[in-house]
Image (cartoon, rainbow, N blue to C red):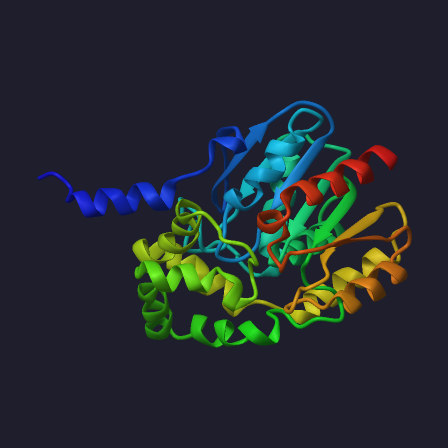
Length: 302
């Protein structure tokens, strides 16, 4: 029996990844299969997204940087991924950080610049602090600092929802409505200031609504978020001057205040801060060229 056209369209929408990301690849790990995308040549950048988005977040940044850098963009199991992890996978903060470190190790990467946005920045800090010496530089774009809560207050309810299977299913089902998912990723939510393409939002919002195993991963990720984990990692980074850190921050970010980024940059050995105008938390969506320019300058001067 053939699959209904509406179902096929949904499957295609949730699996779509921008061709700007480059070639899709995969690594089989004990926790499950991690997909990533590769484009360009040169010093290696590894780009990490946060909750309920995927590699598409970085598509325009990759397009701006691929002529100067080898861009590897991860598709992590944070709720908008195609391939669910094993039921036994550790998807807590240290577990996700370990996945990032495992990818670097399996690919034999050294001297990497690790770049994280939103909760991807939290995981990147933990990965550098606890798991790997393969990272030469760290770039954090509008994410948790040691002075923020994880998740931020505006989204603290997600941790509660994630612990109740029925509430989580209802929240995921709500994202099937196109207008609701557009508003969930838009300016009203304080996430992206400028409109995000419909196909990108669909790839973010639909996987958890359509695949119960992906939703199981969401529950594991969100229910285990830990402010203490970020603060512990940040303390280690403050004591580790061998890893320069660039903070690329939106002046208008309502989730992660610029004042916290300024304080963190001053506390980090070799910490730097670049301020991005006309953007909210999703700076790679709102101002990809400015984010790319900041990364390029940081790596070339480092």
